[in-house]
Amino acid sequence: MYPFTYVRGDDRQAAVALAAEPGTEFLAGGTDMLQLLKDEVRRPRRLVEITSLSGMSEISSGPQGLRLGALARMADVADHPAVRDEYPVISQALLASASPQVRNMATIGGNLLQRTRCAYFRDTAMPCNRREPGSGCSAIDGENRLHAVLGGSDHCIATHASDLAVALVACDAVVVVTGPSGEQRIKLEDLHLLPGETPEKETVLQPGDLITAVEVPPLAFARRSLYRKVRDRASFEFALAAAAVALDIDGGTIRQARVALGGVGTKPWRSHEAEKALTGAKLETASFEKAAAAALAAARPLHQNGFKIILAQRTLIRALLTVGA
Amino acid sequence: MSDWDVSRRGFLQTTALTSGGFAFAQFVDRHGALAAEPEAAPSESAPARQRVTLQVNRTSHELTLDPRTTLLDALREHIGLTGAKKGCDMGACGACTVHLDGKRVVSCLTLAASAEGRRITTIEGLAEGDELHPMQAAFVEHDGFQCGYCTPGQIMSAVALVGEGRAASDDSIREFMSGNLCRCGAYPNIVAAIKSVAGGRA
Ligand SMILES: Cc1cc2nc3c(=O)[nH]c(=O)nc-3n(C[C@H](O)[C@H](O)[C@H](O)COP(=O)(O)OP(=O)(O)OC[C@H]3O[C@@H](n4cnc5c(N)ncnc54)[C@H](O)[C@@H]3O)c2cc1C
Ligand code: SF4
Ligand code: FES
Ligand code: FES
Image (cartoon, rainbow over all chains, first blue to last red; front, side, top):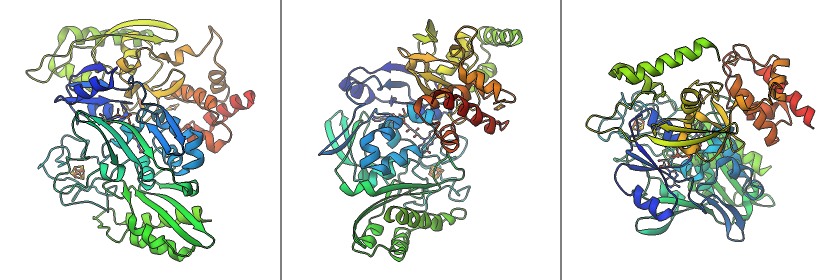
């Protein structure tokens, strides 16, 4: 670990002003930050602890939908009755993430901004465009079994690792941000950037931007939603493929659908293609298969991760079969 | 804690403090012990140490720490509570599990400074005097360990799991103990130990 100083933020504006200065980062639950500090991938000179900020941990629900304070812990959100009943996909995505200990520590804001698990990104001995722009991508011709098949570029193919973000993007969530230039609301779908030629630019956030809350608009049919995650072991592992789905069903017909994929995209992957295929379709396996094919139509396999294209389709079909039953 | 353990630890700390040799400082840094002055990036002065007061097992400890010190290292290297173990130091094995304000966390990914003002409970704080906590007794009764390295973390996690109401079935126990790995594979007996405690409560 490189040396840093540690400051506790007790006022939102002061924390934002500090973090806008070069070499300064926010520290929330610390579960991703500490790993990256230890690996010397991140070398901030100052950390501003934000868990002490007031008014950012609440979870509330009402006619305007669900509001998750950015400092709410993953475990508390997963167990909140409104989340469990009205947005099961969010609760399930959280319970399928990390371990109970990590979920007690990690925050909603930190979760959305966690960095990729690409092993080369976390190994400073290896070239990586995301960590060191222009140094090259070790994964494209290297170990890429866990990498993305959707949204990659010739510069980076790293998977976005968050399960929660996949569930939230399916629910049209909005991120509330306070920064040096005031407050803004950003659709979660627009928060993360595709790697393109600048994989080091991961989100649209600027230095000092603090996520204060995540808002999920009312979505009545989210009661019929589900998160399905497939991984190399039964628990405590990142996704090989995951699907977040919600269906609005009218008799034997699908009125509306929400579909997002995890484990296969370079960002939390909302599939408007699959949603389009499902809208107005009959509630039957053939419709689900068509939607799955549409969701993966643009997939580009690398030498080790081609299996994800089939796995993701099957994961999505299974999720739709379960939620449609 | 054996005498050997204590003297070895003392040796490591004094050597680190007096020698300040580069290779050794690197070793200490890599292992996160941070007993030595930080080996700063060239041309940058080391950050000031900071005072941190930790409330551990109902006792208050005033420490002066490098800001990089994790809660796990503060407990083990500065307070001398070596019950919490360092396995992976990356949040992946659960050997370092302690309770913060009654909730289980991994102390290797918690900065000591972040734990200030919170109630910290370690395995050393579970027993009431000579009387083992029921979960400790159950691990002994059911042979819930072999080498014992993961055991403090398993027990801290298990106590929390029962409190969380996740002990309803074997599957639930297994899922909610998934943050604690055991390289000896004592899992079946760990599940049995937890079930016996949870059953006794119901
Ligand atoms: C062993 C292990 C297993 C895991 N498994 C999974 C898994 O299966 N699925 C999954 O989805 N995740 C998994 N994770 C990742 C975990 O969910 C994230 O590490 C966690 O959610 C990050 O939240 P945090 O509060 O600890 O963030 P921190 O580590 O404190 O911060 C992460 C980043 O976000 C920034 N930040 C934090 N809060 C804010 C804010 N409010 N505004 C602006 N910036 C902010 C920080 O500056 C930092 O850059 C795992 C982590 C570990 C350690
Ligand atoms: S995939 Fe992206 S993060 Fe991984 S090595 Fe390539 S550039 Fe780096
Ligand atoms: S040592 Fe903390 S989880 Fe392994
Ligand atoms: S008892 Fe040896 S690691 Fe669990």
